[in-house]
Length: 103
Image (cartoon, rainbow, N blue to C red):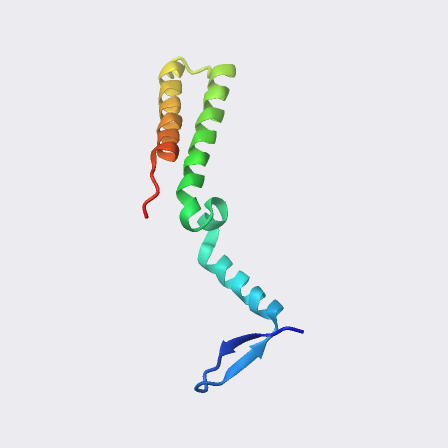
């Protein structure tokens, strides 16, 4: 069985632990650091893209609902709401395709 070495608290000595225990510990630590928002949107560099994708999907779903199931409230102007939702979707698309990679 292969073991993973990690530094010991006692100087230069190393302590061997099983790979399964090591990866279980890493996974538990990442889940704790990530939290609920990380679980929903991801961690690291993919998070902004995931949030933009969520904004696009939510805007388009709400737009479709407003078009096919118009509200009964006469004070609510569905055309203005659809315009705002489409604007949010196009803004998120512009963010996704317009952001450059910085080296």
